[in-house]
Image (tube, rainbow, N blue to C red; front, side, top):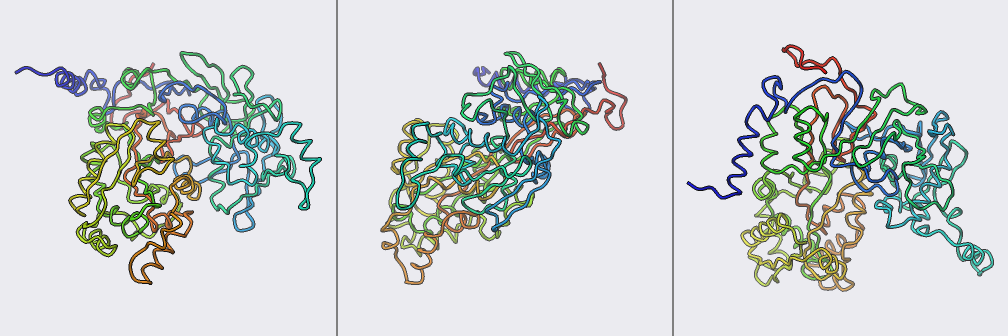
Length: 568
């Protein structure tokens, strides 16, 4: 029997992966590839490529953000296991005005790599620089809850400053400088006070993000990227080398907690793709792999190995409603469409088990970390009977009279498969027809901006465990309810009043988001890592943000119940 080329390729790949030679032979003892225990505290990391920037304001995703968090330290950091905020440059902190004002007390022994002390003013100037950079900084929006951050996107010119000083009105000055209006203020060298636009009880968790890390600036208007030559940092590690082949970090001499850092050296290994990363790991040239786009077949075969890890990642795919259009202005319609979806089947069958069903907007592991508590009755599990009843209550029994749903997605094969599955569920459960509109990215974004859709596929990578920030980012640009929407609502006065209330409540918490259902959570992505058994403290989490400060090489590690494995 002849085999097609793709079938032959996958057959050979399967045989190779299953053969012991590919996985390191009998000495691997259930681990993938050759286990050679190092004799030094050097960590070799394949992190999806080499860092391209070491500037907190410009780092968008790993490996850049991983490198930034290693060489710069913020006010707080995340415990990599629990994601609870822990002290960084700030020894402790306190809030007032019900979470609208936060005061951080900085440690006096925090130093830059040039020996100068880290001060509160360093944080103020660094944050002002980030908001001045504006949208060129990928995560500027994380700072916009700070008073004055939105108006500080561009630094005023000397002429503008002069005009502001000269121009008076009956209400006082027309505007103030960035320094005067910005909500982060240095009360002293070691006291930083931050005023927020809206209360945020998890603000210490938010400032653990890499974009809040301070940098040592030559001037307040230094907006260009910081580059390796002469880079001054304040983290547990310092940049020792950066070229096209590798990036090397070394334990920082000036770091206040140097005695608690085990690793002496970290090398980011340059691997071309996931296959090259697997080969390097199998041969013992890499201690950990993360952020590698493994194929589904490889994931299935790797899952049986002890050093393979899978975790839910805070990257959500969801469907948002154009709530300015009837009947999607009716919360009963939105809930019916949500409850008709079998998320488990989508993740298991359509996506080969590579994702996690999303019954809510934030991953459960954020709840495990002490984050938002949500009534489980709000979880979006499939409930076909309730979905049908809600649709009938909204005036569309058995789907009669319901318009064809225009479902907008970006051009992507997986998203097409998911959309077809969702459309089939809406048809089978609610007797509703769907037109799937597939567009290239630029046109897709244009239709989103113009509100030319009924339901649209969206995605968000969560940057923090902070509930307020995640929900605000998720719902900030959804099409608002139309001015006439509440006047068009059908039903009894009591029902209409309930619907008006649901539509008018601002979305600031996950509970509110689940009650309004202006969007439908579909699935969370998964993250995968391979970590050698002699590596401890490399803890993966929902933010996909391990901490190098806790990593250690156990140079005396042995497989329990076996003789010592190979050593260099």
